[in-house]
Length: 109
Image (cartoon, rainbow, N blue to C red; front, side, top):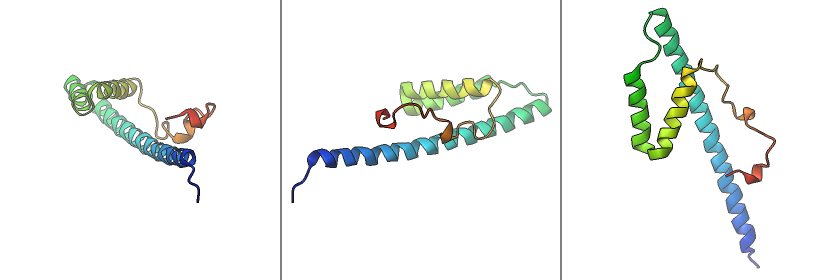
C-alpha cells in the first residue's frame, strides 16, 4: 500500500480549515449575542435617562481583552466597543451567510 504524504497533508489541512470555519461560526454567533445584550442595555439606559457611554465599563472590557489576548485583544475590544457605539446592529447581522462569498474559500486560513 502506497501512502501519499501530500494527500494526507491536504486532507489534514482541509479538516483543520473546517474546524476553523466551525470556530468562526461560533465566534460570530457569540458576537451577535453580545451585540443583542448591548442593545438591551442601551434600551434600558435610554428609558432610565442614564448616560449611554460608561467610560469605566469600556475601560474594563478593553483591559480584560488586552490582558487575556495581548495586542490582538486590544484590536478585538476596540472593534467591539466601536461597533456598539454606532447604533448597535440587529440580531443576525453577523450571520455566517453574510460573509464575503466572492473569494476563493481555499485561500482562507
